[in-house]
Length: 248
Ligand SMILES: [Mg+2]
Image (cartoon, rainbow, N blue to C red):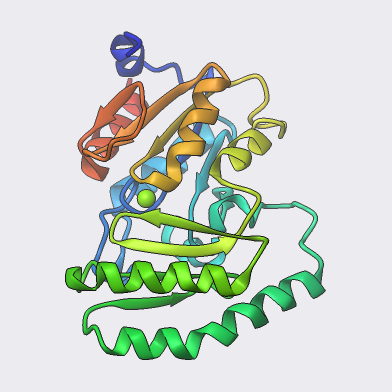
């Protein structure tokens, strides 16, 4: 591990670009994704950080970016669906999206029946993908993992399987959170800054690795075994750190 603790504690907001995962990083995970909230203090500080860095802040999430507007506000740039849904990017052609949505829809009835057999488990329809959550039904892990693997086999090429904490997800192959970070770094507000990225789960690995490869800092949340330069205990610790940086 690089000795960057001191630098982290006195981080120069002028020189860095900030990248945050949302669930488990900025906000505590809740049993259902729709129950997650961002603390008002952290929301305010993210707005401050956005102003102080003149826009060098982005959220890179597995959620659809539209879901985050009500949680973080309309100003912060959000890359959704693990980077596939990138702000101002040329949109994926309609016919490709339609084909993906149709492919996922064809799987949903079987998945819904499976979920009904496991009270507490959850099917999240992401339109161009889906996630199976077992936080509320830990005994369902094996069955849901198996179902996701079967779905991947049925879908064929062009899709990938993304495991996470108490969740497994199917999404279009290609972009990941690492490509999203690299794309942000080419935008005027981010260009020339060192990236610092914060993530808590396996799907954040490409983002953390991209930050390090660009000469930046990777910060992991909690105990998940991610290769990172530093660790914070969780969203509360991150909020306290950011609040301190803004007050400095
Ligand atoms: Mg997360």
